[in-house]
Structure formats: C-alpha cells, structure tokens
Length: 416
Image (tube, rainbow, N blue to C red; front, side, top):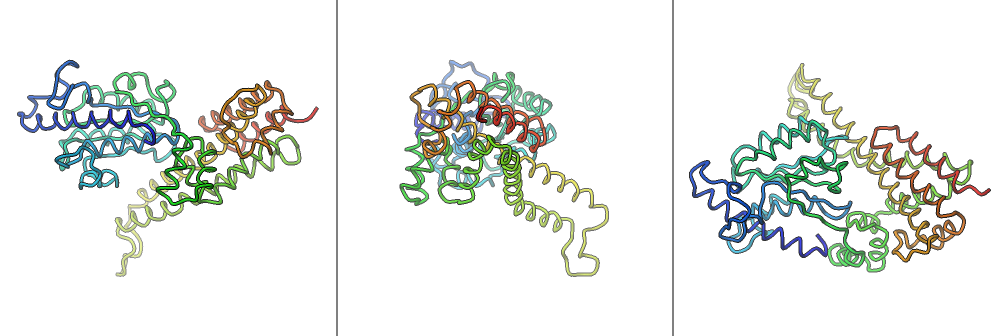
C-alpha cells in the first residue's frame, strides 16, 4: 500500500476495534454477544463499532496491491502482539503473510472462474470456530471471476455470517461487471489507487537493490504496478515481451508483417504461460501421486492403486484450465501495454498535457503515430484493443481475437 497512509490508518483502526470485539466475545456466553448485534452508533472499548464490519471489499487497478492489503489486514486481525496491532513479527502475523495460518483461507481462481463448489467448500469451513486465531477469515482474490452461482453462494454467507467469520473480497472496481451489486452493498469498501512512479522507483531501489536509473525507467512504464516494474527491471524476457507488444502497432500497418506479429504475440504468451505453470504442475502432480501411493520401492508400488485415475484426470483438468487462464493473463498484459500506447498517441494528437504511459517510446513510436493518424483513427485503434480484451474474456480463441484486432488497427493506420 505504497503512499496510502490514510487507508493504512483506517484498517489499523478497524483491526484494533475488532480485537476489542473479539475479547468481548471470548468473555460472553456462546451466542450471547455478536459484534454485529448493536447499531452503528454503539461504542466498543477501542472506539466506534462501525470501524469494524464482517465483510470488506478491496478494489484498485492491477498493481495497486488490493490482495496484499487484504492479506495484511487479515494478519492485523489475527495479530497476537500485546502492545501493537499488526506487528508483522508474531507467529500469527508471519503465518498469515506466509499463507499458512489455519484460520485464514484464500480463494484463488484455479482456472477461468471461481466456481460455486470452491465457494461452498470454503464457506462451510469458515463457519467453524477459529482454532488458533481470533477469527475465521476468508480472502476472495479476484472476486470479479466469481460465477453467478458462486456469487450467490457467497452472498448468502455474507448476509448471515457467524460471529467469528470475516470476508475480505478483492476486485478491480465496484462496477457491476466486476462485483455483484448485492455483494457490493453488503461490504465496506476500501479503494486503493495506483502508486506514483517515484514511490515505485524508491521501493525498487530500497527493497530490491535495483540501480536507480533502471528503477526509475521501470517505474515510469509499469502503469503503477509494483510487481510489473520489478519484472521489467530484472527480467530481460519481460522487457522483450513489452517491446513485442508495442511493436504490433507498426507491424499492423503492413500486410507482410501484421499477421506474423499477431501470431508471435500469441505464441509468446503461450510459451510464457507454460513456463510459469510447468514447475507448479510438476510439484502438484508429484504430491498427488505420492498421496495415492505411487513412487514406492516395493512390489506393486511404482504406480498408484487402481481406481485413482479419476483423481489424476481431475488434477490435469484443473492444471489445463489454470494454464489457459495464465496464458490469457499474459496476453492481456501485452494488450494493456498496446492500449496504453494508443492512449499516448491520442493524447499527443489532441494536445493533452498528461503523463505518458510509455515515455521511453515517445520519439520512436508515439510522436510519429500522432502525426500520422488522426485522433479519430487512434481512438478506433484503442477501441480495437479493448474489444480484443473483451473477446478473450468471452473465451474467443486468442488467435482469432488478436488477428481481428490487427486487421482493424491496420485499416486505421495504413497509409492512404
């Protein structure tokens, strides 16, 4: 949460209030006291009761740290330090931040969506009393990927939460396409913003030891995404993928290069997704096979017992779905870069005084493009990229979606 001190203070105040409520629940008979029984004007020992609630919605653009903020808030809620809320050093804090706390559960989309089955399983577990912490906490990352049935199942749990259960949802925005209106209305909203480039650069230098000039460049082209800035600073392949995506604008103007560039973009995203998934898939498969009894040295133990093929196939299905999601995420990142390039060109052509998203490409790409094409043409190019992103979300094959985008861009930018 770089540069968002006000939100940090708000969450710390809520965690402090929650600690007081938890103490009261510990002292009360089971079911006699609920932290949601009293009205919004009631007071707790640590301050106003309304500073804490059972459901939260963290929103913000990619890179704003909404999932990190939700996890840190969960750590503060579970913190066991006597004189500080959210110390970051006690066992509760460290296990929450490491993802190993027994009373904090994360719902992460394994594939394209978060299914109703995932929600029901987690909600059932979250209804139990905490084992080691003060609360049962459910963190729903990428809540915008909830299916309609999954959102309805979660809504029911949020509407009637157990006294000891807290839900932390993360989504890009409060728009209906990102989070159901009914869910939004039952959550307290925490809106995060993208950090400034200077703040990101400072983090890269201080935390990661990256050269100041490289950190400043990476921060300026990251779109406010700390993780992406770090990858661009340290990973040559990430820089090459960005150059490839931005080069599509020029390649689209010639028939001889347009479709080859589109095919390369999709191929690169596929290879990157396979590389990201390979290590995790191998570890999961090995863990499952061991659990099924394979890998032993005795007679008949080299393979898993009969009747376990279904479990293996189910794992392979989930891994395939996750690879597809990863591939589309990588491709979408490239499309966001391309959209930002056309946005820069449109801004220059209109004479707008705004900070460029790709300042390092101004003289090479953006300025020539702004001189070459009219604002209307650049706007249509930008729309083509955004519609390609929407097509990918509706499961259009990436090759077809990107090819169609390239055709539309080429029509606008080709010389007449």
